Amino acid sequence: MLLIPLLDNLHSKPFMGEILSSTLFMSASQHYKQQANKFCLQPPTFNIGDSFWLDACNIRTTRPTPKLSKRKLGPFKIESVVLKNSFKLSLPSKWKAIHPVFHVSLLEPAK
Image (tube, rainbow, N blue to C red):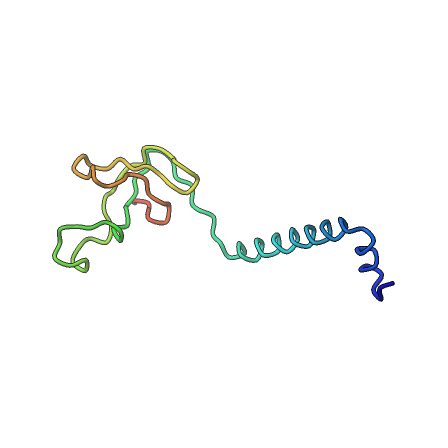
């Protein structure tokens, strides 16, 4: 006989240990998720046809240095919503080498 009654029960019924461990795992993962999302901001809602400035941090230009290039490009209109956080923009035809889908963090509403 074991000293801890809970362990005695687990020893007699091996599947109870699996149930207990999976329950503890689920509650711990839910707690971690809640703590991780505590300070996350909800993405803003954008509509099709709205105008936005595109952050140029990932787009190469022909300027001599990145310091001299524009910080924001556009304004561009939203063609469609691809996912909850990504949008397809209507880019000029001369930019056909650039993929037109961008994350919401790279967009800033045009005023």
